Image (cartoon, rainbow, N blue to C red; front, top):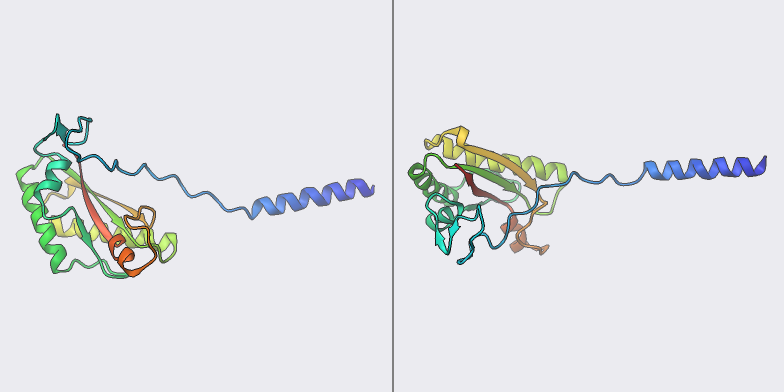
Length: 175
């Protein structure tokens, strides 16, 4: 009887500990290839054709606009004057290629909870989208996604790294 009692007690303890285990976060899509814009690439979807940039591609977009990235202050999602200038250059390019669709990715620094940063990243991406739409870009051409703090571009835990990670990035996804 004592052996049965200790077996039941051990099983109960194991079940209780298993219930406290951390849940795995949902799997995010893979990060974009870092060499997508390299000269000489000939990979489908890179916007390169034997080293030449294809008009209307993501590589053409990055080459033609002042930047594909706008940055934000801590806990902010408002579009400032610098971001407006960048987004205005994106509007000009998007008007040249009315068939092109884009995704705006919202990102945050590592501070704050996962849930908070996903929500803030969403607000940042939608602020950029709303600006583009207000400037005449059809909303059906623009999708948004938030990665929160899951895809930093700077890995440090300092103000300079945090500032680089608080951003919205525009990516050409196709026609």
